[in-house]
Length: 510
Image 1 (cartoon, rainbow, N blue to C red):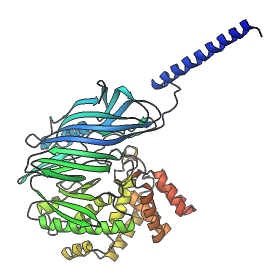
Image 2 (image 1 turned 180 degrees about the vertical axis):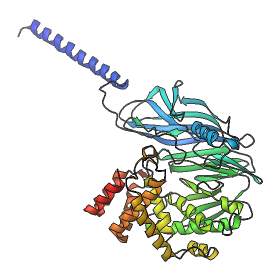
Image 3 (image 1 turned 90 degrees about the vertical axis):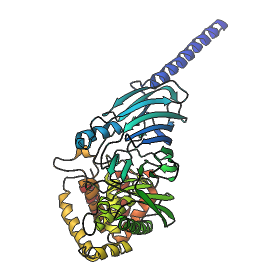
Image 4 (image 1 turned 180 degrees about the horizontal axis):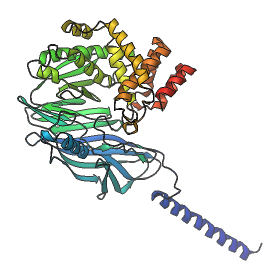
């Protein structure tokens, strides 16, 4: 080959290499722009922490929020878009439509700003009844890097006996503050979770994040805030680690009793009134017994303390769970309804919400599409494990209410109930979201009752000892993680791979 031919071949090779490099660059840019055949994104976008600066205007029933979210791009691609959730528009709309007689018309919320620290203003659009904020970032977050997003929000607080609302009584006001704080939507492999607002249940993130919270409120208010908190001169500061959600209760006729059980500090908040001592005593008994029973049979509580807070939710529902804090509907023990003040019902509510510290706070799950995983397991802890175990609580309840049957009779009643409910569950899968329910079925049939009955059937099949092993292994394996229905099914097959187990799984699970 002569010299001119060699030089010509080199030019051709150089030109081809240049084209290949240019094509690679164009392809990479096209992928970032979401090309039709772009490789799917893998990994997650995780919320690492929330710094929340809050101010409660008790004169106008308004909450001002500045929330700084630190997120990490744990995917294999630069992050150009995020989704945030703000449930306040839907909460206030629901209150105006269903609780208009309580003065909720005209109440609203305003998104003041969304900023990416160190970058230009992002573009924000609202979807899903305003509850989903799609944020186009002005500066992409590289794979493996972190970013801080600042969110400013101001919202009215509805007059409502619920998890987000204010109640006005002769003695003062009580504020339940939850579901009103913006948060990062769950993300898996480039897909954002867009579950709708659901007033009867929950649509929350499963991310574990650290919280640092400050709340300014009138000095007369006692504040219960999840995590380790302290209040001085109307300023509450709180810190909490590895929590999936956050909640606060503030009240100017509330007191607190502090005790320790199973190495955990319990802040037992109760409302001042004629029946405060009855509530306080029963709440302490239930808490001590619940912690003892659940620790022995499931595993250790994951936090250093728990706030148990008496709230006023009327007679619609019993309470609400959050990591490190539970709201308990103590209306009967505040108003003094009935000669026994509903002692058994209150005990069931308290132990149920405490049980969620094991199933939801520790073992996470998608509460909208697979609500049975936290409600079903927690209902089992409440109805079968706690209510049928000899305890000071059960002795106390039967002392003040002679009509409650002994434990042996109560167990027989529950077994008969389970047998009847088995037939009622035909055609009703427990692992479906509420919007897929068959006609005529109501929320709770699958999540609470169905999940509970399914676990009773599993217990009957495995036997008491092997079911106890299954429960402990499930908790140990998925503690501080997120579990799905398929994870439970796989673990159950490990304990019994026979045809009877397969029949149970087919009957209850879609």
